[in-house]
Amino acid sequence: MFNKILVANRGEIAIRVMRAARELGIKTVAVYSDADKDAPHVHYADEAFPIGPAQSTLSYLHIPNIINAAVHTGAEAIHPGYGFLSENDHFARVCETWGLVFIGPPADAIQKMGIKAEARRIMKEAGVPVVPGTEGTVSDVAEARAIAEQIGYPILVKASFGGGGRGIRIVESADGLEDALERASREAKSAFGQGDVYLEKYLLNPRHIEIQVIADKHGNVVTLGERESSLQRRRQKVMEEAPSPALTPEIREQMSEASRKAARAVDYVSAGTLEFLLDDTGHFYFMEMNTRVQVEHPCTEMVTGVDVVKEQIRVAAGLPLSIRQEDVKMQGWSIECRINAEDPDAMFRPSPGTVTTWKEPGGPWVRVDAAAQAGYVVQPYYDSLLAKLVTWGRDRDEAVARMRRALSEFEVDGVKTTIQMHQQLMEDAEFQQGRIHINFLGERFKGA
Image 1 (cartoon, rainbow, N blue to C red):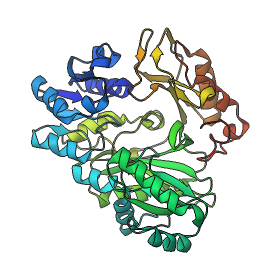
Image 2: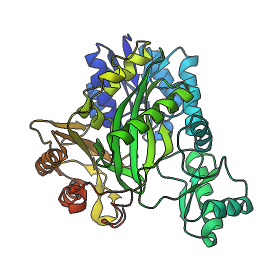
Image 3: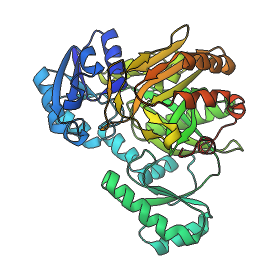
Image 4: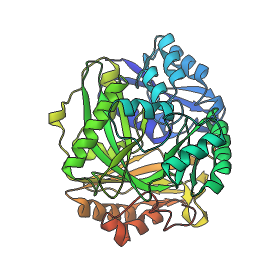
């Protein structure tokens, strides 16, 4: 096992990783930008090291500064958390070059699954269902028109690189195809440095279902059930739950088996998530793989009792998984609400500033993963996530009731938050009955 690891991230995920490390008896190193010198994750770690100015490109995304921090502090491994460099295969290779263990999948797996068109091809060859679409990227408008007619409108134009909902356009008819190709390619090139796009059939109001997978270096691949991630705004998840109200045991096993096939197809090691679209007939299709720990992993931990981050660290150290597939049992129900510093009444505009009041909820089966407190400054440079509020219940109704109670106890002043929006969702009759889909939030909140 490692003696010391560096966490190349900030906020709640940095503290989450450090807590897992502490339970394993591992010392931790925090890194921080000038804007984060007094942030909670800096104080939680055993050591802290500055890595540059507030802008993430000059700090949390600056590979030489992070490697220097690891070498200077004597860290043996780097955990990237999520976002920032977590799915950067070049960073994983640089870590290896410097003799540092990257606590994540092999660089080749990150690269293969990071190129969406390539990932589709690999999944298709592995026998994993994919949404009807192009075999690779499209080279020009004429080719795109011919393929779109064959697939049938509506279609999605999607960036081959990147994620987070960027570089994606819905095209209802041939008239809008050329403009969508140009806009998606331009946005993708600006965000990811690559403008390649491909086409997929657009499924009307599907659910977004994901399977948590974790694999070790000894050939063991285990799935930990599913999460429902259909509640999204602009393709960014807002609320998640485990299990999904839509899955039968048969569909769950089919998706889990497909996910194990997918992981083996790219020689995957570490925690990862297979994301699928599920239509109203029970058919599911591979969408992408997130080659990192996800924001919503606590839902899985609450219903399985498996500490996903500790397993990640153990696997990176060369140890076998501590669980077998037959050990995995999903018990009860879990819901996670992302509490963001955003104003839902103003098109979800970010709300930077100083938190003047911070009172977290408590009580049985309530978990708060946070890196905010009274006096905490919400910076305009980074993601607006303040906390993840997670509840567990013996069934979905109890989990919802507990979340409703927990939200009523959560007090935050000084910045606008999404707490009230989540309270409204808890009272929504369709949500209470589990009748949700990826456009659900957009139908209820302006700007979502």
